[in-house]
Image 1 (cartoon, helix red, strand yellow):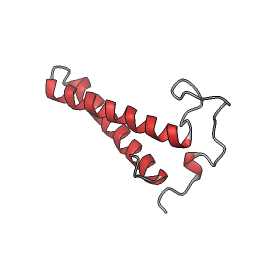
Image 2: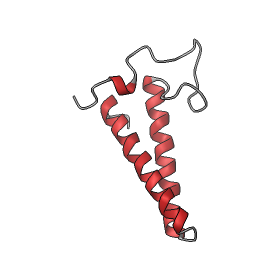
Image 3: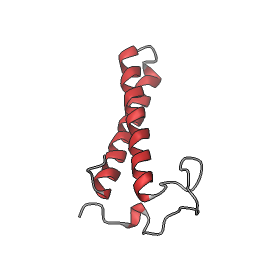
Length: 88
């Protein structure tokens, strides 16, 4: 993630989020599929790491509950992620 630019990092987060939701839906119907659980857990960990890396560099993606702030209060001073053109 360190070598990715902002747009690439957001794209990776979106891809991992989609994959986690997709695996979650699959597991709702196949709760005893150990291989799928391992895949879900791996994707979930990757998503957590990707979000953490993004937030360390660019600030929180959410306004509460998921992103920590250093002092002084760190919030978005740039355009919001959805206000940016990510596919430059």
